[in-house]
Length: 412
Image 1 (cartoon, rainbow, N blue to C red):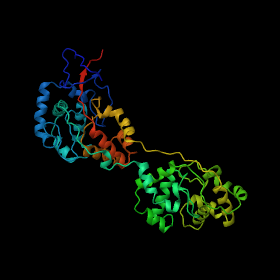
Image 2 (cartoon, one colour; image 1 turned 180 degrees about the vertical axis):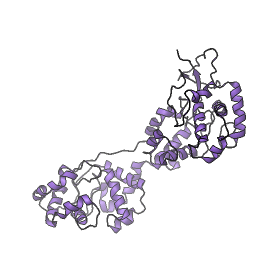
Image 3 (cartoon, one colour; image 1 turned 135 degrees about the horizontal axis):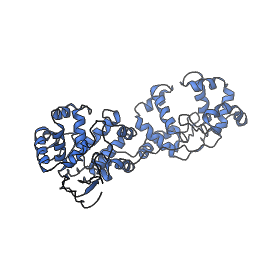
Image 4 (cartoon, rainbow, N blue to C red; image 1 turned 135 degrees about the vertical axis):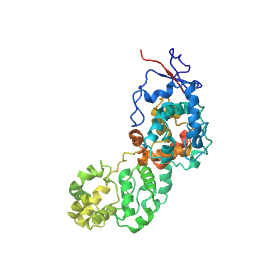
């Protein structure tokens, strides 16, 4: 990105001259295509070479085919319909071709561009790219839009658990498990098991029946960040005898009961009575778990108490915490392709700064579900939570869009 335009070589038709910043392109075909559509080399960059007559013809095409939804100024007023004023020209051209080929699963758009030739698509793309972009929308604060901090949400939800599981997740009630020191993946799986009835406990089932996956993850995150401590409950049993018998458990649950596998719970510092009752539940089939059934069947209740006493006496360790990324951190990743603040300098990559909030939300969900195809965007969006989508959409809708001039420099 440079601040002044490099003069074009004689005879070259550099486009979008009204813009205030410039991006030097050294040759057509310098970027990988942003869509799976097969386009002849250099053809996707034709809007960059559009002249005044091309842009005038593009305006005529826009009036007939595009203005009803996108406006002649490129400012959309329809729900979840994008602004396209100032959008990157090669991107517009590639997307219009993809819609025409039926690759986007959007019948109204397919119908609108079905009769457009490659030349018309190039011209209308150059026309909309030459317009000043829409100003960013005035939006309420992100928190008012429903975005929650996962750790704060988990802490708030944990207040309802403290009566049984203790303050900070350290149990003071025999038979009730501590919740600290558990891997997030295991914690969420356990909540889902109570919810589905795989774990037989009517009280827990009623408590978690309305819990969403996001709620469970927030709780898991909160408890995983707390300093682990041993349960403050009695441990009847012979710890020395329990250590000898616990050898069969360490293969899965780790030395001294500190698991190295996310899906397998740590037992160190856990309430002893809970460990006994949980193992008996696996033994008699009240809990589903083939990997636990055989080891549990080999232990009598006296041995179980000894093993539980041994593990309860071990110091628990904090699990590896998978902290969710903040909107600012996620946006840094998005900016790698879409440009600082969503202002792309790649003519084939869409600018998303100042885009309609509802459109950004719609497209992110489409990539997450696979309704819209892109290997890169599917990988990026698959890890996003609903809160992340809301946060990112709000972030980019607030950014100030900036136009770009692309100056063509022929290869040496």
